[in-house]
Image (tube, rainbow, N blue to C red; front, side):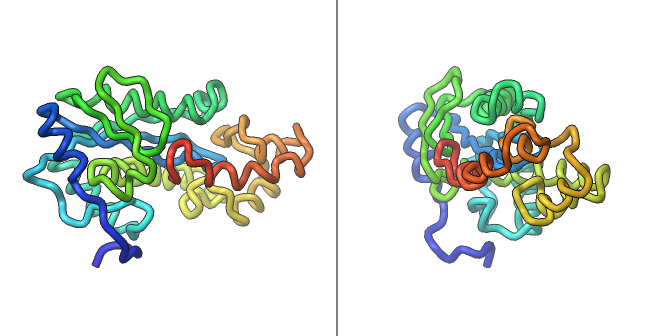
Length: 231
């Protein structure tokens, strides 16, 4: 049995209705890496083939790493996939929300054919040249969004593993840039790299730009904010 969650699984129902109404295609869109203190944010857009949907697709957060890798390969083989990557520079210049929406736009631009309907995880849609529907917790409800969550998560994880090879003292391959005790200890010992998000208040605190207590509340808001889901 795949994943850790025995609750309801994502379905293709919303996509099927959209295809009947519009003729399709329908793309699911999700992101990975909104909350970390380091690394890019990655968005993916996926158009599933209704006749070739890989078995076991689910929200990437409830899948084991090896399951995500297996499904990633199957999705790439059977579906139309686009990926957008917003760098740390873009995140710091335009803020994490705008950088994420931009990455989603880039992911959709890579799709051929372009979707007539886009299903977006969260409640803030990117500006797209098609009908857009936001679905909070969409990665747990819609197979297309769940597939996008897998593509985005695996893509970003691979990038962070590579970053871990470049900066072995930071443990990026383990915590993927998130706010873990290991990560904070590495920042304390070795400082801030060019891959850390200087617009994030915990990093500003680490640089001595603001008092540490001013960054306390940001750690929870970065991962609990429902604006773009929970990735």
